[in-house]
Structures are given as structure tokens and as C-alpha cells.
Amino acid sequence: MIRIRMNYIVCVISVIVMLGATAYADDAGEQRVGVVSLLGEQLELSHIGALFLTSRQMKLLVDSWGIDEDIVQSSQLELSELPGIKPASVQYSYDWFSAVYNSGTRRMTQSYDPVEMNEQIRSLAVDHGLDVVILIMGGEMLNPISGSTDVRGYGLARKKSGSDKSTFIYLSANVKVLDARSLMMLDEFDIRKTEQIPNHYWKSQRSDMSAELQVFMADWVKRSAMDGIKANLRIESLIKNSR
Image (cartoon, rainbow, N blue to C red; front, side, top):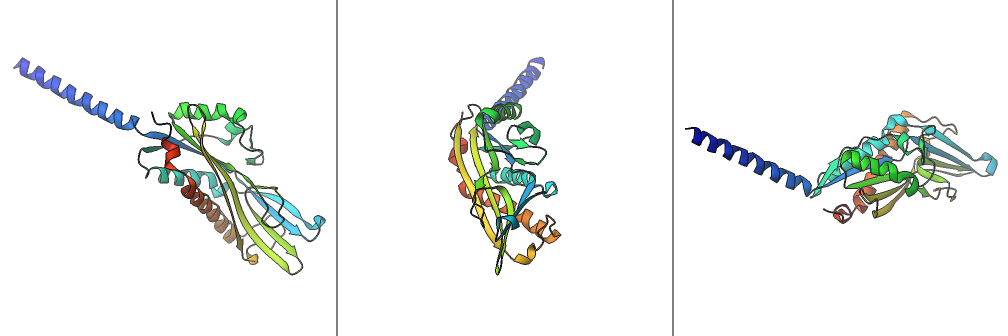
């Protein structure tokens, strides 16, 4: 009786060990991918007049829009549908990237600098057990109206010169896929999109915006970012460094 009971216990333990080993093997075969979005919480507003003195540039804090949070969540949802990929929830703060992010203005002050950011990226990777990090930052682009290279991230530009009146919204983002262990660049692409909108959306030369325009703009930025990510992100870059 004792021998039968001991054999039973040994069998149960063996099954548990086998199940545990199988589960570990399945998890080990997946690439843990974390998403960090640093587009920022400040909207650029540009009024382009006929003369230099009539042109103005302003900044508007839009932290309530939740741009980065929504992009991260949507990216994780997209990643969860890819085979061999396990999206990981990454907890981070803008302050961690103070070398390239100004917490006072809530926007990027310069482009990605490996020397300045590698330590933060590596720390996130270790803390969350990541294999790959997708880093989304504001990129530079030509102002859709003036043609100057002074816009970064997302914003609104309006031209008012005589009968020539036009209003554009724009997004410029840079996406990098990094090996979380070596920090080697696995992939990189830019997202640049502009769209002309009706002038009545934004008539004032001040930084105030109607509730309707804020909702429209926030949705447009998030949708444009995700469209760019889905169109350009290659699954090969996420599994290139598989174990």
C-alpha cells in the first residue's frame, strides 16, 4: 500500500515537472518585446504669414490626450497577434530620458543618441526581461507650409497670406527596433504624414483649440502613428535575435 502510494506521488511529481518544462520551453521560444513611445505631450502650432514678422510658432501642452499611452497599448495589441512574439508591459517615465527629453516642455529636444540613451534602454530590458525594444520618438520633417525643417513630432500649421489660406496637421516619428541585449539596431523607419483640414477647425492665432479639433487631432495622431507602424514593422526584425 505504501509502495503504491509512493509510486503515485512520484508519477504526479513527474507530470508536474514535465508540464513545467514544456511551459518554460514555450515561453523561452517567444521574443519578449517592449514598446517605449516618447512622442511627447506638446503640440506644435505654426502660423505662417506673408512676412516674417507675421509668422508665429507656439507650443501647447496636450498631456490629457494620452498620445504615448495609447500608441503603446495599440502596439502591444498588434504584437500579441504575431507568432512567436510576447508583448511585455514596460513601465517607464519621461524623466528617465532627460538627456533627450525636456520634462519642462514635455517634448524631445534632440534625436536618439545611443551614448545618452543606452543605459536607460538596457535598464528597461533587464528589469522587464526584454529581448527586443521598439522605441518611438519624434522625427524631423519639413513644415508642410513653410518648407523649413523646424518641425518635430506632431503639430498644426496654418498659412494666412491674402487669399491663400490653408491648414495642415502633421506627424513625424522615428521608430527604432533594438536588440535589448546588445542594443544593436535591428530595424529603423520613419513615419511622416500630413493632411489638409478645413480652415474653420482653427481660426485663432492664439494657442486655444476647440474641443472638436482636439478630439480630431488626438485621434489622427494616434491613428497615423499606428498605420505607419503596422505598414513598416517587419516581424523578421523582431525574431532576428532569437535564442
